[in-house]
Length: 507
Image (cartoon, rainbow, N blue to C red):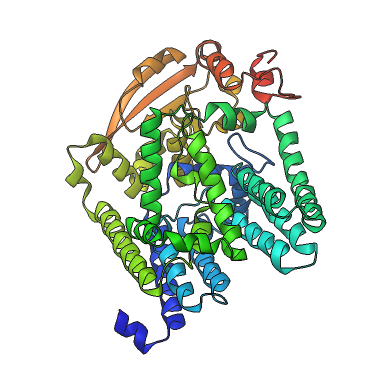
């Protein structure tokens, strides 16, 4: 590879890699089966609203736009396919004036991290990462380059769009505010901070209005329902550190430690200082939060590019090359592992029943749907999982409801389904395993259990006739109301469709 780079300039090499990564990612996007989270967001796109149960709505709007053309997986995933390529190129362009040689290797090291090479899923993180990155760039421009208020306004606009993608953008907003207050409290920048807040305000206001009219769902979910308690604090800290080592790689971390004296020097460079703050201020907050809540990998992704920009000048060119080589080898191992799982016959996993069922459904959904087709005229299709319902909805192109309690995640179906209207109707419940189906018999006047095989996988059906809404309301909907719609007194709520629909009064 070194000979190739020597024969061609590094810029040409950079663009060859960008092109190769695009083709690899678009192939993965077409090949990898649709996941439950992605299919759930596609449900959003098919049911437009200015908010959804879990998050702010931007990915739903994006998918709605793409769905006007096609629902092919590789098409719907195109924003995610392009995202790390666009950000890698942007990192290159940001660094090029200051570090023309390091710019290529730093940008490629970011691009070829496993999370950027193989993650082609379209989720709420996709627009969040993009708009956070753009907002940060305009923030830097506003503080150090431009005398115009326009860049503060644009930083605020894109921060608002990031917030309308996911609440994690609030941390970027805090980073902006503390940076100005601590380091640039002059009149220009304090006015600029006000402009940023002014631009974000309509997005926050619209979200608060949606929460007011929809049971406070976003607030309840993000502050209470979704935040699983942390493990032992030392275990949580260990998991967090291992996650960061994985994201940055042992090689990059080794070079950062080796060159730690150079890190201090980067603080005197404006662009390094801004991005260092924007990266490590949220990461430091997570170190505090992890003692109470579990920190997932996706929590840090919108701040991930900032790390590479901030430390670009710390490593030598040779060290960045070593980091690049480590990253592509590690990512290659991930690609081989993923390809092996997809290419191996499902019989290979015969001793792992759940894996066989998941792979079979993912690889051959049309064969599974063929078994369900005889029931589609007389039955409402259901599963007991939001992920399975969403995936089945995607492949069947018809709404599949979520039956029973479900998880604390992704409860948008409670807005889309009215169980009152299903009283006395027939419901077919599909499941990949027999577990939990027997206890659902009581919600029907009569029911029958059946199973069918596709390839090596066995799938289960509960064929329910005469749905008993009153019993279901008492034993399922009422506990859901008490657990997921317990609106605290301090939260102002005007409307709650779930409570109104099923006659649950009060907060």
